[in-house]
Every structure is written in C-alpha cells, then in structure tokens.
Length: 113
Image 1 (cartoon, rainbow, N blue to C red):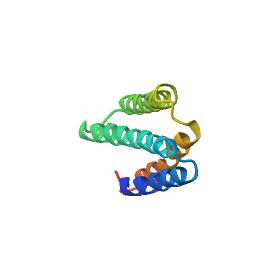
Image 2 (cartoon, helix red, strand yellow; image 1 turned 180 degrees about the vertical axis):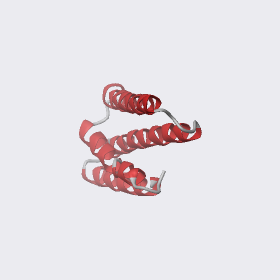
Image 3 (tube, helix red, strand yellow; image 1 turned 45 degrees about the vertical axis):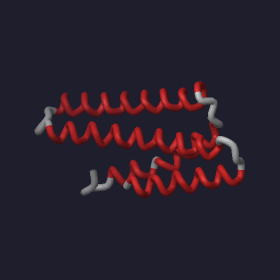
Image 4 (cartoon, rainbow, N blue to C red; image 1 turned 135 degrees about the vertical axis):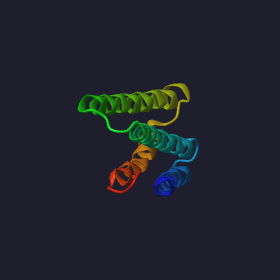
C-alpha cells in the first residue's frame, strides 16, 4: 500500500522536477507526505478502534467523526504550512497529494488494513 503510494508520488515529483525544476519536485513530495500522513492517521485510528473491542453504534459514530475531523485538520494545516510558510508551489503540492490518495482506496478494500 505505502509502496504504491511512494511510487506514484515519486513519479509525479520526478515529472515536476524535470519539467519545472526548482522546488516543484519538493512541493509534489510534500503533497505526497501530506497524503501519507492522512493515510497513517486513518490506519492508527482504525487500529485503536479494533483494539477497543466491540463498540456501540454511538461510539462507532464518534470514532468516525473524530477520525474525519483529525484527517481534515491535518491536511488543512499541512497545506497551509506548505503553501503559506514554506512557499511551495500549489499545483505540484496538490498533484502530489492527489497521487498519494489511491492508497486510501487500497486501504479500504476488504481484507486490508
């Protein structure tokens, strides 16, 4: 799962580095790292929920909402850091993030995660 994500992000970063040069490749890698952070938060929250044993419907919904909030906030903060503070180019950053997202689909398949 992570190998696929690294390969797709690495390909996008290499393309941006060759075509645009400068920090475009680094911006794509930062976007990919943001997607990886998102995936790791999802995996961590799922493992914690599985270790907790059987949850009530209310508890399951709370875990779902908390996970979504954590992941949304982390992506927003990392985008703000990359674009605002580090002044990385937005397009390569966003495309690097998008390239890392298919790993989330692989994570969601039955029997994985």
